[in-house]
Image (cartoon, rainbow, N blue to C red; front, side, top):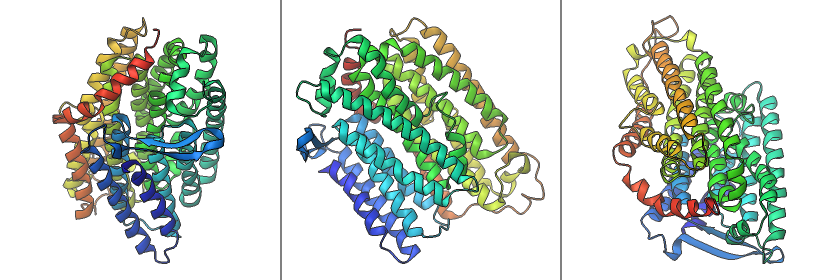
Length: 489
């Protein structure tokens, strides 16, 4: 019942939220719903993986042999936990933001949460595609109705990219469906195809799925929708996009692409890894040149997700375990950065780094919390990101799936240096630079904002110092996935 509750609570709450007449009531209802979802997610962590309450299977579309099959394994638990933690944080962090027709805004946010939960829980390919679209559609409306001045242009580009990617994935799903032994969409029927689909077919089918997932992450050169969409979307929506939705693409690689098409994944592994490396360096260099805080964080996210994608294609125990923990850590850290950007923009009505400076003199609380989050973003030891990055680099170097493992490791390591450059430069110029007329009357952040950032810092430190629970949660899933991805290799 846990998987069903994780989907039903935000789904039903979304439709209830649309009926509210008072904006404050809609905001409070959304926060209550997200906290209830978080409680259910935490309860799910306490259950044994074999517990029947972590799985649900029922008739859905019998004519197509598609069932409403959802379940929680280590991968699903880590991402549903990230989703359930993120939404309460987002709602509290943006509590003071005003939206016209707020009930519609919060209803769409909860609808997107339901879709995200479904993506991470689905054990049926058609159901997976259904929730994939359910997660994306509310974002189109959220960005186009409550975004910035160039929101229509940004949303249109986002729509075109994701529509094309989704269409390609649907073609691939239908092709595989007709080649299953029992004409079924079940995940086990798709996994069984790896022994029957020819190497040549796996080669071209790989790209139908990979492009859809690459657009969501995004990976160079499928990334051009991202910076403008992040910049023009409301802060709450940007947090969802960068902290959770990018994980849909990584999840797709791990859950569906690699295990279903292992030979195609191996054939194109070096090509994709090269794209990841190019994107990481390209995005890091662009982040260094940005004067807009939102665009700097956006390009930073591309670089970090590129490293996770590279680690997935290394197909080693260490790299895959690193990806699992890094997906969670990146989500927490990037939300922290977006909260700081939102607080700065709200107080100074600007995001330009060149117009800011000396904020730490008047807002020491914000400065201290930002520095911790920023240092986690560059993987300082004893922070959550250090654990994930160390394991990913170790796994990439030890990979037997490519003969270029040393080249990939060394080149990817350059981006660690670049990330330190642009993050430390931002901290210096914005918080410890020279105070100006704009920042002379700075006020420190309020108590609720300090509490939210303190929660994020606590998660950063706890996972960084004691990551063992995450390893234990995901180890069995990692072993099972690698066994399928390394089939006949």
